[in-house]
Image (cartoon, one colour):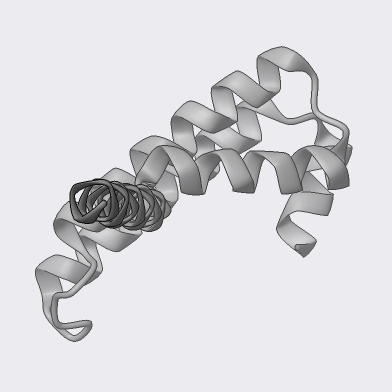
Length: 113
């Protein structure tokens, strides 16, 4: 009887540990550039009624911008000239892609957002 109780208790502990590990993985995934970009594209699609090609292009641009920010801007001094130059460069590239991808009306709405 004691052995059965030990087996049941050990199974419960293992199941609780697996659930905890899955929750940690989900939390870590929220910081990935792809996850952030997917949410932003979804929001932009609701506001601007994007086509499929526009969604793909904007998704790639947002992933690139987020990963570049993560490497070169985030966590660094905002007054550092290199960080300021990198931020401006990434923003300019992103704006060029958005202007090229969106229609004139969509681009105006996007700038207003």
